[in-house]
Image 1 (cartoon, rainbow, N blue to C red):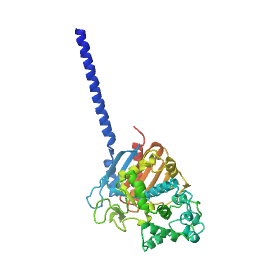
Image 2 (image 1 turned 90 degrees about the horizontal axis):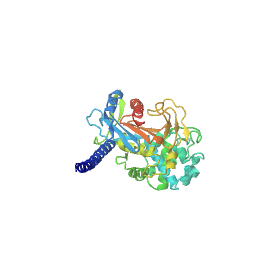
Image 3 (image 1 turned 180 degrees about the vertical axis):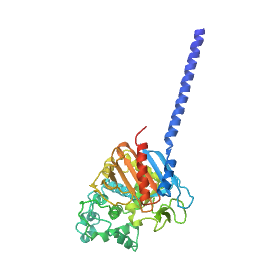
Image 4 (image 1 turned 45 degrees about the horizontal axis):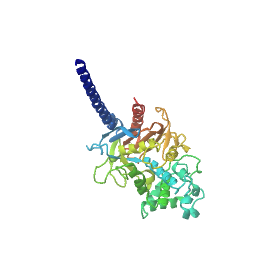
Length: 403
């Protein structure tokens, strides 16, 4: 009987131990899940950058495997005012909008409405007789890779003239195409890289022609909504008359000057395909995470093959001196993306920087490792550029490799 009692007691203990192990395992898994779902805070990391580089505000986020693993913000929406930024605040992304325009092109290519070698004459046949013969041969791929032979030399006059045009944005962009079509190219097609906002405006007009919708409608319906970018929009990130988002800033005499949202607070709307979008750092990170997955993680906006096309170099940028803040001196350009070899990274980075001269945004991603990060600030200029150049390698070193 004592043996029997021992057996019964041992069995009960075994059952109790198994139950306890299950509870402990469930607790550990729950705790791990909670930890995984809570990104590491970058707030304290960003705070010193404000004074060091004269920034009103700064935000950053790191993504890996489709998840935000770290994020943070610091500073104020408006210099001289105590209005702290939040993690959901909208920042301007400037020319990082170009990758959205290139993605739209990929969607229309897959749908058979455009080809990468579709020419301006193909898309606007009614203008062919008035086109310069070389302009008529400019392809969609050349426009998106800044190798079309066009430059921004006449862009200022075109923008001034656009303010006098009637109609919706697609009609005004079509007017810009007509005004440009008869002019000679600045250099032979495909001969060299020349960064060109006019090129992207023409590419956007091509997308508008084949869809009968404005570029803004297309971005909203085909990219923003499927990706769930709830804070994404167009034009100044704040609303005129309120401080509901970070104001853009310029630096005058070494001091930050807030720029009110309005006509002088952003690029002209006609340049939308080249750079008028804004969104929060978390939504920007979501966009980068989708690209870093190379089309292998939903939503299926385009095929992985098309994502690969968008990320593949088309032309070398050559070595350029006196480049604008945030611009690499050398590298290559794909479609809406640049490819750069940074000395602090083990592999070339797919990257782009955007600025309307009052904000600066940087995106970097390494598709093979499904990793990337974004950095944003609400001031343009060399100080912001220097801050990004310091923070980027720090984020890479801290988060690129698993510990």
